[in-house]
Length: 146
Image (cartoon, helix red, strand yellow):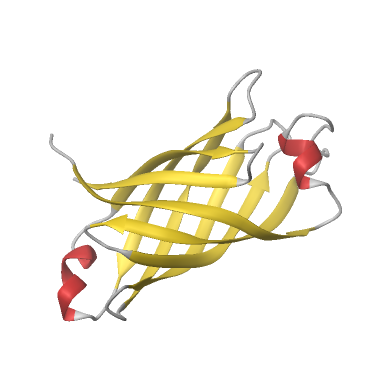
């Protein structure tokens, strides 16, 4: 199997909507996850570089289960440097590293656009691998097509 890296993105957390729990305290382990779990709507924005180049903004509807698993559901828009738009949706999971402020990320990504120059993104899902650095509130993901 061969994979082609099509782009990478570096996103900053620009805002958080919580639903009664402190995201930073839960993700850093200072507080336990409530029995019912927790949800946070995390606003994100930052550059996209590679075969697709531009900027992305979106919201990750992050759920933290009582067992600590982080479930990711990101919806957003990539606006390319040439003015095209690509709809971005990703679902996956985050796994915290022991003793580090890092959460490893693995996501399945769907891209959709009617822009002819980027129609190749519609053909099949992409896969992303990266991390969230809780110390800097930055996310980095490399995106591949199979």
